[in-house]
Image 1 (cartoon, rainbow, N blue to C red):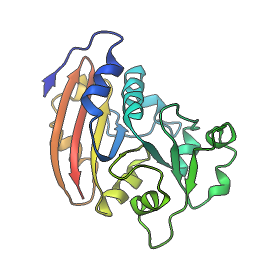
Image 2: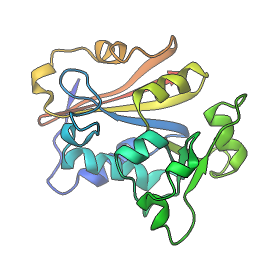
Image 3: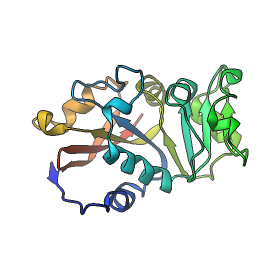
Length: 207
């Protein structure tokens, strides 16, 4: 673990420089002290804080496309991002059209993708041509869909944010990763940072 100090107000710049150089797919998760990815209201908001928002904005500022799921878009009440278009994976597209993500989208750049039964999510995204070949794609959906992506053989970077991490600072990075119960894969630890009361880990996953 590396202990890092960031000057107040420089969090976004630090994260953009540290984590913004990926190619292909990257995914981000906020995980609570007990390993939970959702709060009592079904969203990630009770688990996160302004520090997490800076990390998310930094990742969004570097990506060509944001991908999420219909469930996440509904629960989190997604809106248009100023940084990149958003593609929502859903089998029920009609249930999404009233979300601010689409009802307030003046540019019409956000889309709903419904993969065919034989298609993987990465294949559906690639076939839609929403991101340049070799570009950056940021996945913001839930853990179950992340498991599906890894099971489909997708290679990606996974960034985990753990607020109030002083209480679990003795946990090894490998243990935190294993607690996600992802399908069998090859994994490498790229970063394990302690920033004040916050811990950020980055893994490379070869599905």
